[in-house]
Image (cartoon, rainbow, N blue to C red; front, side, top):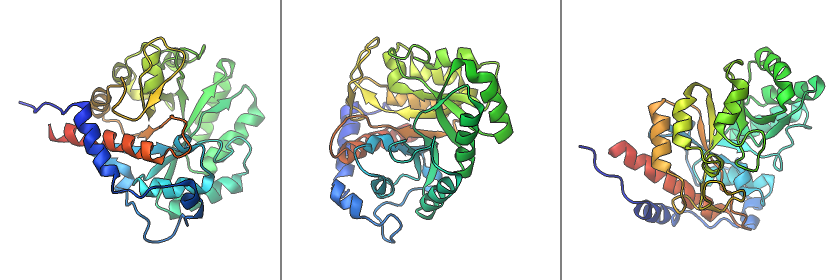
Length: 299
């Protein structure tokens, strides 16, 4: 008989105690940090895999901090995977050489760039080709995107030509095109399987979609997960983000679903509270997620 999982409060307490070992990361310290210096705080497990799940950090979580903060933050939090937001790197306008240099810098720090912030994909071949060239140059496993619905024939051609996975990010009730994973699947179910989903669990929940059910239902097309917590109710058009374990999102159920489908992508934590120093809240949230995974592994 499986042992019952601890309550969210118990897991949150464990996560909080874990964060006490982390140094306080103010923006001044982060700006001054040398991203490739030896002796950085965190050592991530291979591929960032913990108890069967690859964990990563969305740099959107620290959008109020400069680009120079991304690698030190990821290393301190023991993150081997980062999804890089457009305020930290301009995916749509950067040069191919800049993308190659970026990837080399992160690789030297022991971190893989596994995704992007949401990139708009218009029905314009020249613009799409530049975006796909940049994704290939950076070695992106997956590009998170919002395609124009009239662009799918062109996008599918690009996906095949570049052998590039893309993942449509759902944005909840306020998104008239892709509020849920299911709504995105209606556009892509007959397209190349490299065109898939980045299921944002918080936005799915607000759009009255069970994230765990969506993961199981669309298993073959789940290319990325944006993990977060929120106290917003289903149907709410305004999100109310909170630290992991303090809201309504069923972390154990989501991780069970991912383990059941043998998900091999990244679970990218996206901490959305808008604070001047988001690192403690992000650390607490990732500690909670790690605690859930550890308890599932031992149950």
